[in-house]
Length: 320
Length: 229
Image (cartoon, rainbow over all chains, first blue to last red; front, side, top):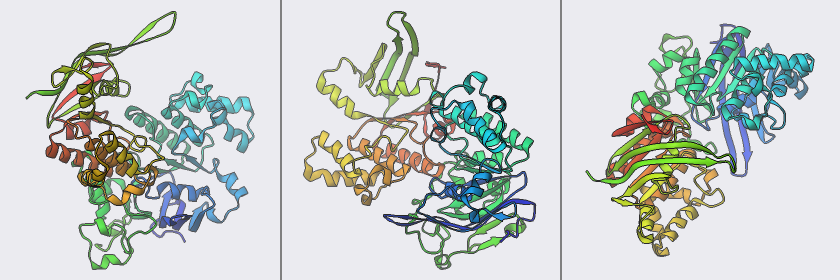
């Protein structure tokens, strides 16, 4: 089950993860055969456009998917498959071992409980810390993320989206988890604050020695803050590699096209639009938009490991 | 080249408080002009007054000082008929594409609403819709769907199609791509450029992203604390 390319002390190994949802319109394949590993203390960015299945992967790892979801595959953490664990076991792991920063902080926080109380809650639940002591620790954590003691005793509805996002980051890091999953942590933050918040988050991550799975659609943010990157398209990972390498020499035609959309590369749009996840194209899902599409692309491409003689590089394309 | 829309020393001050009045200056002496076939970029941080200036130019808010001139005429002193023509010819596209459309109405109904307002005979609605959809690169299959059933990029294209039905001369684009993914952003920006070169539209592009402004704009103004700097 362990991904062979992950010899470097993996802490979380996701293998063959497939998630489908039964809907009135048909079966939505939100993630298909997703495999990656997160190494000790590293930051891995899972990048892709909105709706490509990034958040579904995060929710599947945390076992937080709705009832109409069907999940196959494995997510191995600390030697055991998370997907096979009971709800009681997962409740122990969530927050303490693996924490998640949700995409919409204003919805993730309770609007009628003060911020410091909410940030302190994991300490009280998992470590049975006293209210006084846990709130003090929460205030310190919030302070590191730029929120003073006055703000710590305010309610989420009195906060901007960016302030709530920083409160969510504080909540996720307060128990020094081994893995942090940050789902669009820059969402709702002003350009200046993105940098400041991300730098502080990375600093805390380094200090507590956590690994970070950074889920984002912001390629520039992923490049700046991650060591490796996995590019998702229509529910599949199409390319994995060192972030710098992917930016300097993208292999998959989708990665190339996506990078060409960047302002510094001239805003070149990708022809066509993302396919439906209910009836995706047969074979390679990027085929209808790909300039290199041929007869063989009617068959699903296999993953090529060690592309470009780089053991970290994987690409799902018939060109390699 | 003659300006289609011109702001002359436009200012806006909000007053608040019943007994102890306080004054908050939002815009100070803004002068700018929009010309046919050209894009004026308006760059500034959140809260600098960019969107307020956009609303003033679109006639949605009255400034407390200065004038807004459309074809040389003050928009607040125009006779009713001329003002209605101005309102059709100066249109706005907003940041949140899904929020710009009524979530309970199908795309077709949202489009037909505009045609009914324009008093277009119902027999011509289909051809006018088809023409607008072709301009923005949308398939007519989407007409039966609701905003929540299409992507953000498609919503923004529908919003643009609704604007184009009015055959505007000026379009005020208030952060038109900041809620979109990078690939969709590139598609919309290129589409806006094409529409400008085909229809000779004048754009005021409001954005906090310098790279978007430098890609689109012929001239740029920077706004800080309600003033052009």
